[in-house]
Length: 221
Image (cartoon, rainbow, N blue to C red; front, side, top):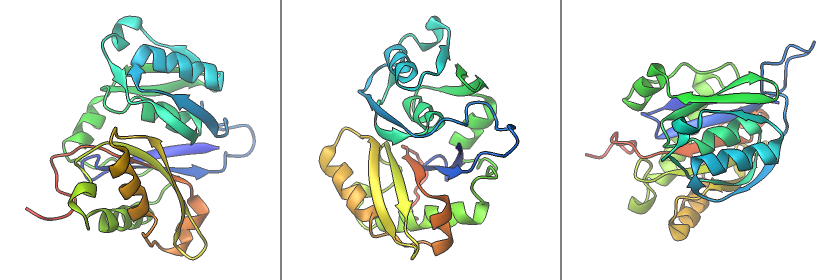
């Protein structure tokens, strides 16, 4: 199973979507692992990466000096290794690159990711079309902008969202809590009310990262 992440709206929302692996043994590195259950608390990044490796069997290739002094938000829930690793690296300034099917390296975030954080959108991977990403983005923003305490861009929270055949939200799972359980519950409840085109059901579940941003996703000054 492969997963892709698309940064939109100054990284207020980052999406991952499931897609079948290519046939013929040509799957990209690090993409053939199915969902894994993670129970990794917020902690120093080095420990979180070791826990990730133990849970997935994927080798960690990282310079200890690079991760020293950096903290991971943790991850509780099921996610494919590629998405799980990206969630563990949220806010660290680092990014992961799978060097083989069973190994990854962690490096400083490249310049193109920094540009995305400053407001430049990254191109959509094949797994999630631009139009579909925008539809999902708008639907999530619409329900979260109703309340001031759930406005996107004011906190960090990772979720998985399942879409049903009618375009409704079948389920929402918080993967990496924001640290405010009451707000997380309100966010999850709001996202359950979102509606999207039914075609998005074929690509779910979607991994959604809500990240702090100076850009107002709700269009209010």
